[in-house]
Length: 365
Image 1 (spheres, rainbow, N blue to C red):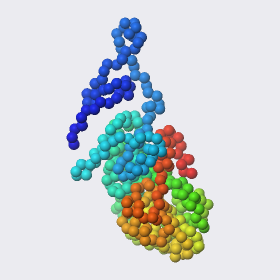
Image 2 (cartoon, rainbow, N blue to C red):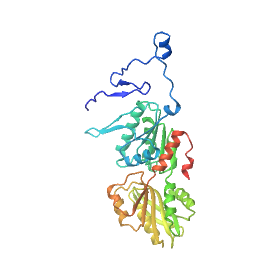
Image 3 (cartoon, rainbow, N blue to C red):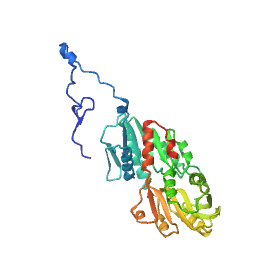
Image 4 (tube, helix red, strand yellow):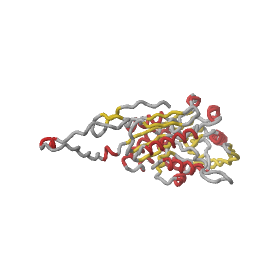
């Protein structure tokens, strides 16, 4: 890469110009008292900065979801941090901070969505740069936590990637993590740093409360999502149903049975991730076959890989509501059935609470 020319920067303490390349600066000013007594002039001691100045907030963004980070910065009232993110011709990531972060409270926003490996390595490099630039605290903000579904040894000789990613983030320099709707809440235990685990439920609950659908029943698409669906149903004071499914292979499921009365009801399928949408479409078909009038679906993370978009477009689902933890592909944006809600306000309030050292419990309501 070409070398950059030396630039002049403003010294925050003296309000004078210093040369960025040599670090030289004019001699400091002398006190009036020393001049009046004819004493040799001595430099005044620097006064300690106030706490509000020493703990300034900065928000940096990777390349995976710039639009969400811009919304968060607008909500918090903090400009996005200045940095340069480039790639060499062979794909290597080059990241450079363009402003001073020494002692700052830094938040790095980067969901590890598709391409997962590329965005994960990018995030690790960004945090390493911040750590080496002496950031006071680094909080990694991951609206979507990639590799979360491999959280246990469910088969012989497999990796537990959600633990591996947690270790990588900590080693790279994260002092704290802010996550949204983990595939399994126990993943928090894989971290050796404080974790704030948010739920997108308040945003989704508010939307469906305003929609005021008649005879609504909340449906969990599998046994693992019952706790999430029960919380949602309790908030809206709605009945709960469960779909029993049997997974025959990776990304392949077979719906077996519907537990609960859905005949003549409007059903709302609640999940954390929509990946290939195979489970979602088969669950909707099972509910309609059991006599449901209409089927809606909502999820936090719209991964929408493989044939997901085509399946949703051709399905009997009335509407699919997701959040913007992952940016929708252009093809998905053209599907009228898909509705996107923003969680920028939720994340913005959490970032403010972490920075001000206040409780984030109110964000669960």
